[in-house]
Image (cartoon, rainbow over the protein chains, first blue to last red):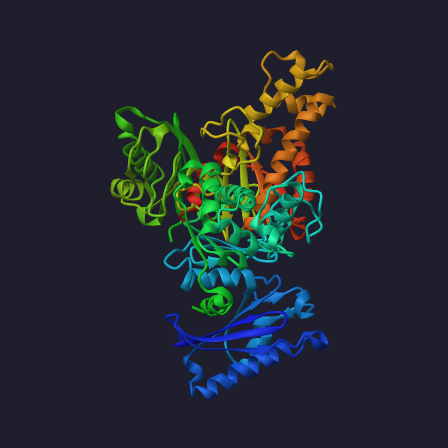
Length: 311
Length: 311
């Protein structure tokens, strides 16, 4: 076991990088651009170069480095292979082998949402726990399932894809996945804004939300904090869908804690207030004391979790 | 590692017992009564006695016995402790310690539904796989989640309690758990019979089901096999609720295979026919090729799974 490990989070435009002590302290973090041209063939060599340069810069012994953990926006199997990652312009890539050959270091790879969940478990909202459901409320709804401190990846790399749980038989609009009535259509930042617009169009009531031309989830939560009745109606619907769905997921894995992250979670504890009531109403009774927390690491969750995979 | 292990499945009236080779062959199986009097204080001593008697009868060396696995109708934590098992009249019992002291053998304990799922993974409908959701359709709906070949027990021992996933906002009748709209209210043997009766009461159409005074799930599936239109309507509703719920559960753990057991599964492959269509319609698209199978071990699943916990 080395004294340090690298955590790399590959996004569509930048690669976030960090070097950590095995205790979880971040020693340095930086970014490089993601070069997606030529089918993304430069991405792994660029990562290898920056990792090796950092080892030189910090004057580390390579034997003191436990390895490189890397999160990828796409499905990753247990062997560290990616069948396809559309945002990186990748077809099949064996990351564990290729990046291992390029760096001479041990490499572990995972899906970015799952890896971020592991980061939150290590040093964020789930610290101190080992069984967790993480929900990321952003443009879409992502998720990660951690059991006994380890990522559940799933047969098709689809474990934790809880944004695509079917929750609504009446939804007419299509989800990005092509189906109708997915959880993310009600509870993503986009979904919340959409719902707010519908409620405003339907009602004659005054609302602080009407001051904004383009309504965002932030507009809605800001208005809620001011006691705006229509915004509270939006939050109630949002919380009912998410709390009820989390209650269902809990009958499957019964986690210790549910951590809520993503842009929507920046509204603060008020987000949890709307979710926990419906969760406790719809959950299997022994699970009523399941804990809830907000994510803490923001955009750094990915580099933390990537590093953690090595330990 | 020994050559043999015991698998014990404690029910409310009988304790099923088996002795297995580590390869999974059953060498002998038998039953003893479950003595629930005096707060069930005789149950573990009775189990110890029958295990030790079998070791003598078979002239085994105790060193060749890997241990005793035991399934209990109640929540069991990872340390082998039961906070309470109503059907056995137990309050807190530390099974792993108490049965270990009584037998001088290593003991592992688990919830009976989870243990039965592990049995089906070892030698039944899930053989050859390692990630499985098992659904048991009986008087109620039980379940078990197996990931990487191991039982997921859950923080409150409630992982796999999928019969109590909330699936119906309109249900007026109460579930045994005190809430309304649980999956088991639509898909247990009782739920299917109930639904059939409702459909018969509402319709004037002739149906083979009308020949029976007391309608059971078997009546319904027998009529379906004869092409009975109202029975097919019951099966379609049943399959839509179960297939849709399994699609949601798959967004959490994305298993390789879903195994359907319990009394209802005795109707045969027709049960799967009604479930798989809705599953594929509602699942996250990459999960469409998830396999389905019927359970194979019937009432023996518990003793197989209990033995498997030791290996």
